Length: 102
Image 1 (cartoon, rainbow, N blue to C red):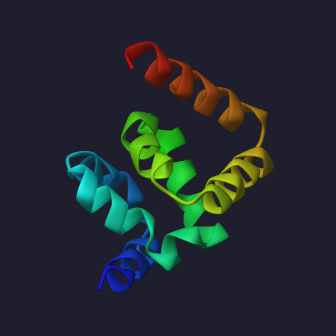
Image 2: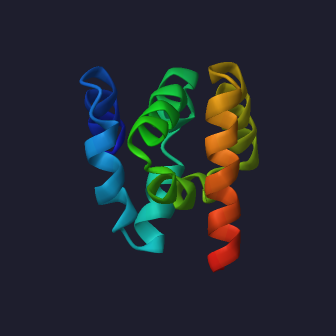
């Protein structure tokens, strides 16, 4: 059910608009969304990370990533590394910020 909206969001590059909505979801909805196979696609992961980086939306993205399978989290980390050191730095700063508030 969720694959189609993810594909449309990807096709229209709407992640910066969707991430704030995802952030408002409860844990059960995060779990459902985090395990939709379409989110494991490298192109989708790249678009999510770039949207978070461009718009400062890492706090909205990280709870979703935290619920993804370990293999998908590893792929997301590799995608971030391919995007360059600035993206990795911003991601690490966001992770430190989340850890400080936990």
